[in-house]
Amino acid sequence: MDSNEKYLRKNIGRKIKLARSRTNYTQEKLAEKLSLSTRYISQLERGIAFGSATTIINLCKALNISSNFLFDDLIDNQASSLNDLVDDKFLEAYLKLNNYNKEVVYLLTTQLVKMQEEKSGNYKDA
Image 1 (cartoon, helix red, strand yellow):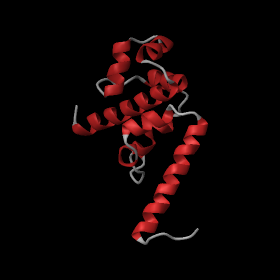
Image 2: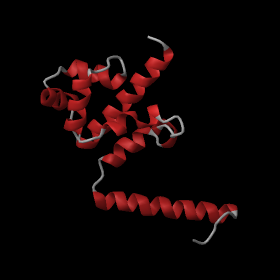
Image 3: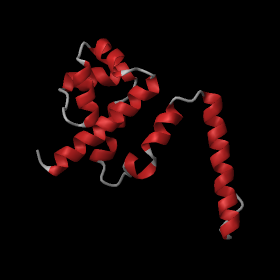
């Protein structure tokens, strides 16, 4: 397996893990839902294994995600990778928040950016 294939598998596996985390499924629960082994789910998430088209479709359905979530940034060379935009630990925790707390995080980060821009003299009124 070449380095590009490893990168693709790890990227997709990371997204599967994030989506599973968002649904609050354990690897065991997801494996049961898909009639797969827990070991196989672990291998998918670590990029060691790559599922068949049927497995990927069933994963998307079980995790309530689109195939775009898994593949978009890998196909579009102009798109930023999720790795470049958000820390994994932050994203996993954020996805577990309820809508109220997601709004709190949004408001807090908006205020932090505003304070940062004001401090650096780059603040622009909208």
